Image 1 (tube, rainbow, N blue to C red):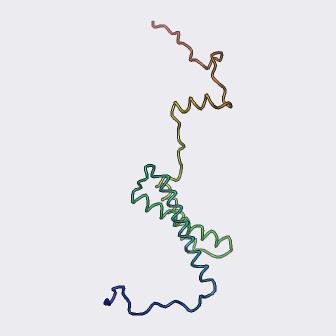
Image 2: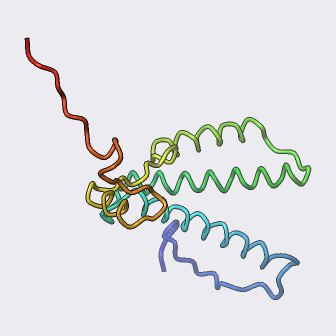
Image 3: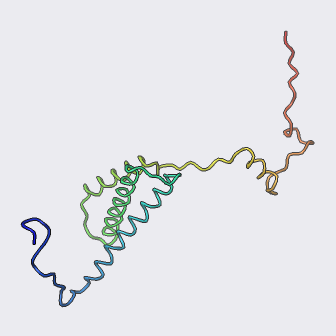
Length: 149
């Protein structure tokens, strides 16, 4: 057996003879919170790391962002139930969450711009857009008739 602080204990591990009221619900709620944090961080990493390789900094920031999001949601739930919260801690967490979200790039997501070929094909196939015909003046650019002096 190990010495002090070795992590090995001589004491036998015992389980409680019975669970207190709500003990399993509390454990399930904690596990659910962890799942939400991990799933949310996974979505952020998947969106931000296009090639599948995410840096350690991105993974860490995504997990911290989702953790703060969970903390803010818990405080908002307490407020909705009429319970008091620590406003300074809430404001600090909200500011930190915003800073992390902006660092990851969650403030604005640029949409995918189609290539020229995809754009021209979409014009041909979509019936809702007016088709370019040779009769319309906007179909072909006007020839320049300016002469050099």
